[in-house]
Amino acid sequence: MRYWHDFKPGESFITPSLTVTQEDILEFAAEFDPQPYHLDSRAANESIFGGLCASGWQVTALMMRLITDTLQEQSVATLGSSGVRQLRWKMPVFSGDTLSASLAVVASHPSAQPGLGELECRIQMRNQNGVPVLESTITLLVELHEIATRISGDVHG
Amino acid sequence: MDKVYIRSRWFEDIPVGEFHVFGSHTFSELEIVEFGKKYAPQLFHTDPQAALDTPYRGLVASGWHLTAIWMKLMVSYSYMERFANGVRDGRRNGAGMAIEDLVWHRPVRPGHTITFIYDIVEKPDRIVRDKWGIIRSRNEDYNQYNQLVMSFMIDILAERNPGSGAHSG
Picture 1: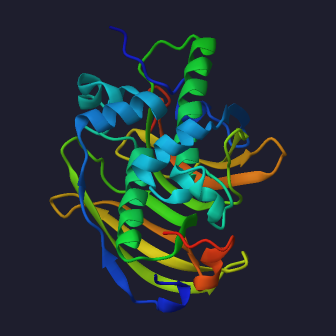
Picture 2: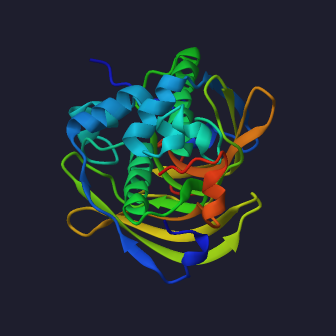
């Protein structure tokens, strides 16, 4: 496993990619964001987006999926994110788009939570044409060292 | 078919200082796990038993599940407001543009009920693509113990009233 102490600002990763289908967009929209431009192609064509596109909150969730998969692939002892300093939706995500992200550690601080450290990361998510769709600076929580993972004496992960 | 848009008021008619408690949601174990499996597959979001052995000491909702529920409640609140105001024309809301200072202050666990509040804090003096204004709100979300679980600022586009002399202020 890799812990907070193992990271220095400047380290960066490229995530795997994933493709967003029309079905994914409709399913998320029906549950969380039932607005015409996420549910209906004709309404979407007339909207500011110019076509059926994913909810911005689906894009942020997919960003988390890409980050989570990458950190697991790198065996990072992460407890997810504690916040987002800033985030911009740059371009709509349309059905069929393939997304991937770059993740760069820009700062490292101890956390107020015992046993944890914070890594501030710059994230840029791009579509298959290399066009940025989302940019953000998010804070990841990472365990300081191995002991923190064994709270009840069990090893996991 | 009627066109349905959720913004019930023009940009000009939305006042700074407006404050709404716009909904509550109780998070079930099942929905936390379903969301976690799709978007944040880590044990503390996907496996109630294994989550006990993580530093969270139990299942917790993904922070992005909270923001998705924020959106869901915002959409249904806006529809209600629209019907209450009898609005039938094509005014509409636009997209979210940016968020700032989003903090997940404490975990949300199965059975927790979160209440969502927004406060319109600013209408930046900027026109986007000729017809949109920006509404900046501060959002705070509390659990049933009145503890803050999430807060953030968001900029959302709202359509300007074409009849109000537009293109200024």
